[in-house]
Image (cartoon, rainbow, N blue to C red; front, top):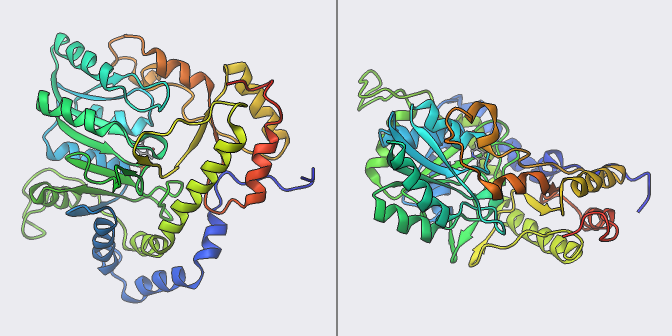
Length: 382
Ligand SMILES: *Cc1c(COP(=O)(O)O)cnc(C)c1O
């Protein structure tokens, strides 16, 4: 590799746009021509295509992944006094929604190998919540980095305890568990189309999936101000949570290439695994699963090794990022909500984790450059 090679982009939406070509423009032009910018025909078409893609009975598109989480919890009537169990190692959106609704997020530690919520610790935390006088109501399993949460275990606990299950699938649309695409693992599944997610729009967007016709009808009502059978029939307090028609048009164009993009992501992840194993901790695969590879995260030996690795990569034009530098229970915004228990795995992983570029427009040469930038095993360790 040449020292003059330009830096590798962490995400390359321009290359993807060029690859999508005229089909993308045609989709956008069709919306400009018909002018139905809210709940236009592309929104209905997209909902049908997305439901078919993951085999779900119902898809309700919404304005973002965060709003998908909020609408799902509003539909269950989750609020003050309710405990909502979720991993401490996730994006803030997962935990902010229960608090916005007056409910209490209860942070659960993660599995040190897969970084997914730890079902054994979940049982402990349900007991802790009851001791605090909270009413256990819901489990949010996050399919972190694109791999599925331990859904069979989470469903078993939810069935025993009578809890609602919500899949925060913001990072994992397109992933699969035991051969089935995510979308039916929980009572409701929330997906994000933020531009950097595996299936990304050119703005904010999201979707909810459910097998329940009653829930789907509630989601449609809640995303449009709680409307009933007509626009000025207000049945409940809702929100303005619709997906724009222009974003639906963009997503329809991107859906055409999505399977090929997922395959390319998997090939890059395999190349990283092969090139980096032994030099740094490569991500453990969740059993019986296919990842959507939103994020390819390696574990360094410690914080100093991560600093050294990041500096070395930066000097070679290879970007890296840290998801997440702090577990949520250590964030100022959540300190008052947390009961103070230590969550040692989340705390440790946050000090050592580092994400490498992984997007479908990375060339084989760029992948080789990322691997070569790691050099020997001395700095990063396992
Ligand atoms: C991105 C993300 C969200 C929020 O999605 P938005 O569309 O940005 O609102 C929620 N949870 C997780 C785990 C995410 O990564």
